[in-house]
Amino acid sequence: MSSDARVAVVTGAARGIGRGIAERLGRDGLHVVVADLPVMKSGVDETVQAIADAGGTATGAEVDVTSEESNELLVRAAVEAGGRLDVFVANAGIAQVQELLEYDTADFEKIFDVNVKGVFFGYRAAAKQFIAQGGGGKIIGAASIVAFRPFAMLGPYSATKWAVRGLTQAAAMEWAEHGITVNAYGPGIVGTAMWDLIDEKLAAKNGQQKGEALAENARSILLGRVSVPDDVAKMVSFLASPDSDYVTGQTMLVDGGIQFS
Ligand code: NAD
Picture 1: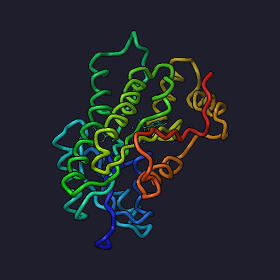
Picture 2 (picture 1 turned 45 degrees about the vertical axis):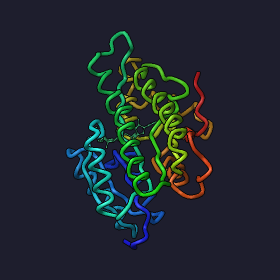
Picture 3 (picture 1 turned 30 degrees about the horizontal axis):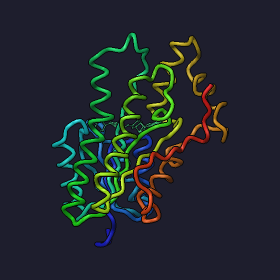
């Protein structure tokens, strides 16, 4: 790794969108700290290897984003690995498909713990490091199209993503004086393990075959296809780069022009 490489942390990077973002930032020349739950170690190792195979540099790390201390240790590990921190991507998230009347309270708390508290702790740990370094830095969070329009049977999940959108705006306001930009990305449908789970549950609820919900939604995407992680990673690459220096407080949709009926 070159000594002046910018350093990025990506949470939830063992698979899916997080892996796509980590690989893209690696190709952009950043040193990437690939972080996920300890149980996802093999996925973390694969992401690190994929970045190395493409000529980049990366370090694997453990994090449970629901713990503030874990986020702070992650930032410390990134600074130890790369000497500084330039970009923090709070990508980790979970989804659950359930009608509101049947939603279990413990599940409701869990989804807010990961998707909202997890993002808040990540944003705050990164901001503290950026301020200690003298300012600057880019914070990027995972929102969703459902941060603008809720999706049937994804009520609490949608609420967490509206929260990320709001937190992103508030953080942008508070930390602009330190030269920190804070933005979020809002994917539509990305063909990952998370969407597989959503598709399966929607199909079961609606009496459809697995894959039918995905196909139905794909018909309502103006660009005619479900997205892949790299579609989202291109937006994150922009938000992580100096090209986005005059952009803050935004949730950038990358949804192929999805339409809701
Ligand atoms: P995914 O389930 O494939 O991957 C999520 C990753 O987050 C996993 O590697 C998982 O281990 C990790 N993770 C979960 N809980 C964690 C925790 N407590 N600490 C650390 N890591 C944890 O999901 P994905 O589709 O890649 O989604 C990534 C992000 O994009 C999520 O925030 C998701 O809500 C959002 N998103 C996804 C879609 C989609 O269609 N797939 C659409 C909009 C937004």
